[in-house]
Image 1: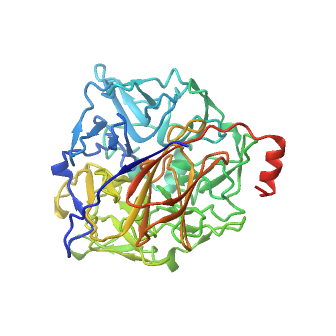
Image 2 (image 1 turned 90 degrees about the vertical axis):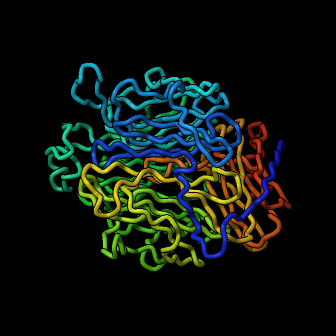
Image 3 (image 1 turned 45 degrees about the vertical axis):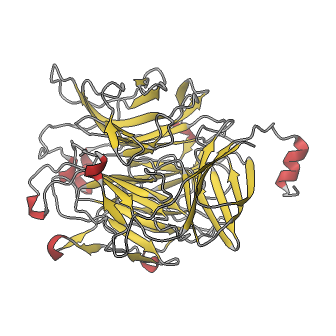
Length: 564
């Protein structure tokens, strides 16, 4: 087993009385805002290490403007390296979301950017639906677009995407969420066909829902569409989905979320029937088919019972879906856990309705339980001040932290957590839209934000970075379990969650005052396991997957009965 240890000294730069998070966008060199085309859609962000230098970079979609690749300089600052990278758009392509994976297993992370429209700059040809963009990482700081070569060439109105290895063959497969099948574009933000001005009745009458897409990765050479494997999936105004192992059976299921779910298709939980290649819709049986205006989903085990729970963002409070395991239906504990807040005090003490988009579970204070961050924002052009929210976990009950430093009044969409400065705590990035009308009445235009975590405590932590061999390069969908005494915690390597975004693939655990990890168990997709004991905290651990031969018939029987 190859295990590499990288040690970081943890310095608390916060003083007593300071807020946990500090907006450092300006000093970090972040100057970005999403140029919205339709008020609901975009933008997204992914945290990934594109150049393998040990510091995580950012790719942010731009809408009508340029997408941006920010290189992490390792000194608290970022540099825009988009020009010359092969990512610079030579035509108007309206981009929405982004996810990442090493598609061809060459050791470098690639990008999948979703789009809703394109227009030729020279001819000013009217906007039409556009294929999504697959950027392969050349390993020298540049990318090359290969969507057509890889079979991702449909003209779609796509919102977001997610990667995960659904057949445990070591190559990342792909899900794409599509909103419309057809859409009548108008350049005016106040045109009659602007989605922001339509309600669920008019949209249901005028526009056909999009067909979500599922692709199998064939040996890193191309993608084969296998959308028909989503048995009884239905259609909906798709805002995307996330691959996740909700039932702890070592294969990745698919949780799909839809807008206008009260009149079209509700949210769907598609259960993976691995090793048979198909998914079955178990949403009704598991009571997860909520009819909502769903925008995003967060994934995490909030109560440390080793079963993953889900928070779905919505207009008004979204459901807090608690997993009871053992095939039992989920239960919505939104009101009892404290996240059921429909209105919140806003600019100059006005009350406003919450409209949620991104959802992140993270242990920002390293105290062993997962907190919840929601990036919130109004629908352009109907702009009103809606702050972001941090719910702090107080032992299975959440309290709103009004002094978090995160409650900006931007038009937020996608968000991610990552440790950009490698100091052992989780920072947050939020994508904000450019308003389509004057909003000076509540403080003006708010650009995208990088929030540094300045929490002041002595809690311990550990980070785990996986290197797959037989599995995907970053171990997408792998399960990591930590035991400290009576404390059990699990995390899942993210392949695309929040809203149109993707968190870091480096798994983070807050350890509180625990001075040793008794057991660390990695379960790769398909069920292969690696086990470490007596692990010390406050370090990044890199674990490389062991090559394992296919189990014999006898081994399979032994595993089945848990005799080994």
